[in-house]
Structure formats: structure tokens, C-alpha cells
Image (tube, rainbow, N blue to C red; front, side, top):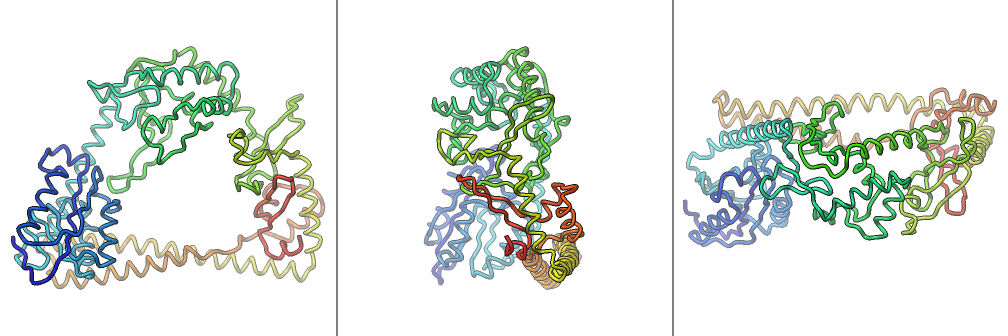
Length: 518
């Protein structure tokens, strides 16, 4: 297949390889793809603008680093021809594939060539008629491969074989069998030390301090992920290790599930749905020590401040770092806490790094002061005319918000129907139920309608209303009576409460009129 050179073409040579493609052998390698593409450009005297490579990325997604870079170069008019080894290199999602081949490339005057498929968008040799069918086959291949991979992983998990990309901290994959875990003698002592320190009475926070002070590599650093995750030990990291049954030789998998082969974001499974196979590898921690730690974790969880019934929960923020303030307790007596104090979570997690300041203050005194201040504002505001006006405004906002949500829901449903209809059009075309002209006309109409509704939905998602307050006047009266003060009442009026390092308190109300009185 030779290309006429009456026009100057600046070519993008695009290569892609997924992990599943690697199984097909050298014929699909990036090196092989490059050689084929370069040979083609040489034979046709074409200019190579750049070579774009996405290695190890599935064709079911079009959100790929170098593919996006290529698209940007097309937008910048640096590229006017795209060449791939075969259509599956461009992508295996036939709907997105069709968008690029039949709409995006023609709109941007980009010539598309698939060498193995003998397809050239500017040569009418009949191949174009079969291209949608090939795209569907590529999509079906991806779907079938995904099912096989998922079934294999499930079977491996049931048989106690490790499926993960990275071994748990303290373990490594066996050089002889990647599904077998063996102890990593370099990091396993750190795991043992975490359990020992916790049993000695150290908290998760204190253990994190120690490890950070000693510059002990974190799990993410041992996996080569410094660019993505924090290089510091955190409380959550310590607790995950303390709770992980993998360290007593049990294989724990199936914590997450991928919805389908096109949606990569996983969902978390309930613990009862995890796949746990005992005694599959050598333990780092003996069971007696592990279960002693679990009991200690449970006992400490019972005294954590989340069990406190605080009226201002979720409203208190640090002025300096913007994080929510935590609550601690002291002087436990006769089944009750006699003192509750606030602290900055950022400071408490890593105090020696001085990322913030303590912000320590008595919670009970603050709560009383806040309630008193809110009541003062309510008294100022209890002018009947102003009160009635805000009630009317909020009722109108509530009705408008109901109508807005209904419109957004209807748009989302309509977009879903259009997606289905567009997909059905491809199927009807492949089956010969509609001709090319009817397909093009109906396809363009459906896509334009979907794009229009999608744009409208995006616009509506930016519309915000002030939150409706139920029986606003009654809430004010309750405050003024100093009776039945609830967290709901405070949350109905207050957006947030900021406390700075000098313990100055600023209350932000949900209604502008209340803020003007404070």
C-alpha cells in the first residue's frame, strides 16, 4: 500500500502494548511495531514528526499519556497523519475507536493508516466498510481477555496463589514462582518491630514518629512509587500492617473488584467477601502475637474520640492548614470523660516536622461559647420581617433545587439511552440493517444530541443553592430557649468554625445575612 506524496505529511507513529498483548510474543512488541512503522514511512518517503509509545496500557481506555500527547500535537497542527501497525493498536473500545476514525480525524484533516489492515482513510478500497466490524472484534477480544484474566485470578486466589503486582511489605515474590511469597529479610524485621512496639504500648502515631526519625523506607518506597505516594510513615500505614493477616501466613485477596473491563476504578468488597486461604506462605508474625495485637487494637478503638457525642463534630477547622480539628480526652472517671480538648490533626500526626501548630484548647468551653454566640446572632436576627424573608428565600431555593435535580436526573437517563442507541446503530450497520448513508446521518444526529445534553448536564452541575433550613424560625426559638440544642441545629446554621494558632474563633454561617450580624 503506497501513499501519494502530492501533499506533505507530518506523521505520528503510534505504538501501544498491553500486558495481555505481550503474551502474543515478539510480533506485538514495541520494537517490532516501530520497525514496521519506520519501514512504511521510508518506503513512502514520509516525514516522521514523532513516535508515540504507550507501553503496558490496555486498549480499552483512550486516556493514555502518549496518545494524549499525540492528540495535542494534532490540535496544534503539528501532525496531519497517524500510522499504526493495526487497528487494535489505536484502541479496542469500538465506540471510542469509531469516534476517532469517523469523526475526530476527518474533522482535523488527519489521514489515518493501519498497515496490517491495509486501511488508508484517503483510499477507497472497500476496507473502510469492514473497519467497524474489525473494531467490534477488537472490543470483543478485550472483553473476552478480561473475563479470562478475571477467572484466572479468581481461581488463583481460591488456590492460595498470589495475584498482586507488589508483594506486601516484608515479603517478595519468589524468583521461581511469581504467585508464591517468600520473606524479604531486608524489610521483614521492620514488620516484626512494628508489632513489638505496639505490644510494648506504643501507639500507631508513635511508631510512625520512630520510623520517620530513623528514615526507614516506607512500603511505597520499596515498591518504587516515591513519585506517587508520601515518603513518610503514617498512622494508617502502621495500622494496615498491624491488621494484615498476610503476616501470619494467610493469603488475603479479593478486597477489591473491577466493575468491568472498561472501568478501571475498583470498588471495595465487604470483608466477608474476601478470599482468605490459610497457611500459604511462611509467616513473619506468630499467631499468638498477631491476635494479641488485634485485641489491643479493639480495646483502643473503643476509646477513640469518634465515640464522643460532640455537637460541633465536623464543623471545626484549623485556620492555618485547613484540616478538621481532632478531639482528645483526659481524666477518665466513673465511665465519663471529664475533659475534652481539641488539637490540629496535621500537627499531631507529625509534630516534629512542624507542619502546623497544636491549636490545643478546651472543647467544652468552646462549645458553650459557640452556642452563646449563635444565640446572640439569632436574637439580632429575630426581626420578623427579616426572618420571614429568609424563610421564603430558602423555601424557593428548596423548590428550585428539587426541580434542578429532577432535570439533571432526566438528562442523565437520556444520555444513557443515547449511548445505547449509538451502540445499537453500529450493530445494525454490521448486520446490514441500515446502509452507510442512513448510518452516518443517524449517527451524527444521535452524537450531537448526546453532546448537547452532556454539555447541559455539566452546566447544571455547577449550579448551587443555599441549603434549605427546615423550620428555620423554630430552630431560632430553640436556641433562644437554651433547650434541646442538637448537632443538627448547629449544622443547619453553621458552615464551619475556624480556630487559628492564637485560639481565635471565627464562625461562618450558611446564610449571608447571619454573617453580616456576626
